[in-house]
Image (cartoon, rainbow, N blue to C red; front, side, top):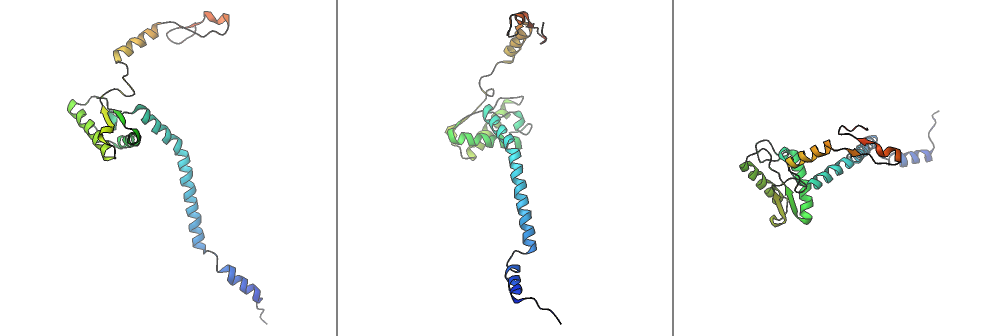
Length: 180
């Protein structure tokens, strides 16, 4: 004699067994959740470095020779990225970008200045809000001959070590950085 399942058990099986997600959907959902988790972890790892890069680009407000394809006025991927960061900032308040002349000719440098200005206008910045200047990055800077003279004076002068006790007041640091 065959034993038949209880009718309530059959009804529960039909009701709960058939209404849930299929096996492949559960697997796909787990993969999607795993992908989302990996993406979030990747962004959390990279975000501090991205912020540091952004702040550095905004601090120097400049593009240099290495931002361009050699012997051309075309920006490299790095140049495009940095110009994009600068464009975001300039869009809000306008300002200047330094484009110091490197070893390129005056003609090529003028083409680069024009290319940067055009790229900023193409990114939605009004031409009267921006200036691309041929100057050192982050201000007027110091001429290299002046910098060499300053370094020479520092190298030959005796620096006094900070004194915390009377016995250490006779200690000094020579030009090689050693205590005497």
